[in-house]
Image 1 (cartoon, rainbow, N blue to C red):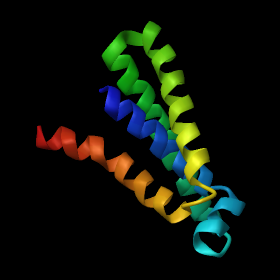
Image 2 (cartoon, rainbow, N blue to C red):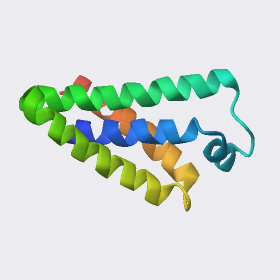
Image 3 (cartoon, rainbow, N blue to C red):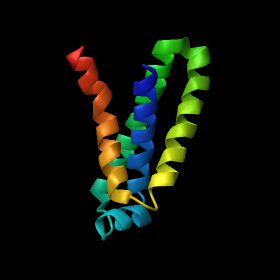
Length: 108
């Protein structure tokens, strides 16, 4: 659950960063359409919500919020480090981070 929480927080922030015009243009060379921008925002918020639910499932709601804020800090920091230097790598890692806990859960 801890790894899933961290991965989903990272993936959520990666999706939210690419929902911004500047970062999406950095990635694709063009502005995102309004529909894509909305989809990326919803995907980002879903990733952050999944991270919160994973933290609450592992530690309970009281301590889960504290762990969630820590995961948000770590995920956001990693996005900030990767975005200026490797936006395409960040996009790939974000997608992998979003799907890896789901695939691991299905395989176990």
